[in-house]
Image (cartoon, rainbow, N blue to C red; front, top):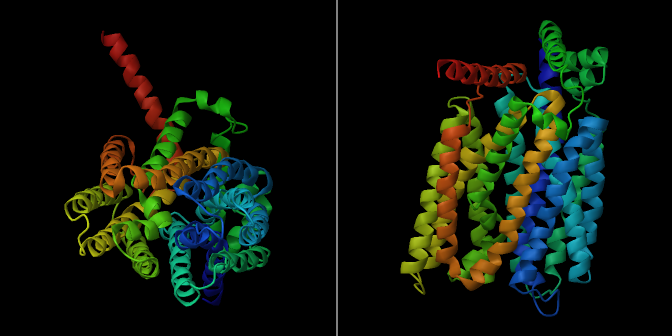
Length: 473
């Protein structure tokens, strides 16, 4: 009994420590929301709508590169060691942004910070998925999403506190940015105390060490059984010695990658990060003053955290596909209302409160249904030897889509206005619903090895059907 308690306690430690990467992901992407208005002032970085988008999106372009190479780096050197390197980069880049004297230095360090964010967005969910058992994987991987939105909430809270108590200080945005250095320190020292992924160890021929890790977090019998399943999966993957772009010639690999990239893009075209990065600007455009908009943003952060708690609970009750379809239907409908009301209530005193209420509803659907499932599906669908490459490419496209939206949104807001901008997101949301309905399979309740077998046999069945059709003709 005591051994089981210790195993669960150690597993909780692994979750808390590794998801500090998610917390940094959330804080570093959310803090810009409140920092931009002060950073834009003439006596600071003197930003216009385009350079505002550049400062926000430079992190996102960096994240795209970090995601692409972070997955490969974690395949080569290990999940744990990669997260350690990322913690160092988080710390250095956070200090660089804080001390930036001009926009060139700011954009450079925001890009470096993005490398860390992108690397964490791939490596942390992968590490969690590989440390968890099939029955607990949904909740365990979703802890990272919870930490991401918690990081964003903390960013909004600190932004509001600093913005309302230090608004007379022209350097208030620097205090907002430097806070991100603290979790980076905790992440580094915490990762020194946790083990490497057993699946990665097996991939390097270290099965004995993998068994020792599994016995730290599983019952002895279960640990041996799971090790046998992992080894069997690697034996079945013998036709793919090393994951490279050449492996895209394999039909079932292409199908998984298509699904991974698709779900990553769908998450971003909802418009979620236009609200998380520019929520203050949206509320200012609707009619709030800067200080009031900063406080209003706390509601967005709070509902995100509460919704993720709900989403984690719901993962045990509902399949992945239904959650995505419900979430996308809710977000698209809410964006439609924002577009309509921002046109019909233009210059009305009620508009900022209506927009704030609708963004809260939007985030409830987004973080309660779409957010937890996206990262979970990405962590589930790729076989171990393809996971670094597959996750890297999928999240690369996620961040590229994110960065394009981040760069374009303030320009669109300043040129075509709030209403037309959100009508564009409505059209994209409808496209996302169609994609999920047509292409996304159900992954709930299957081990990682069973999912690989499903994708392999699914495509073999399709090939057999094609042959039969040709014979009939």
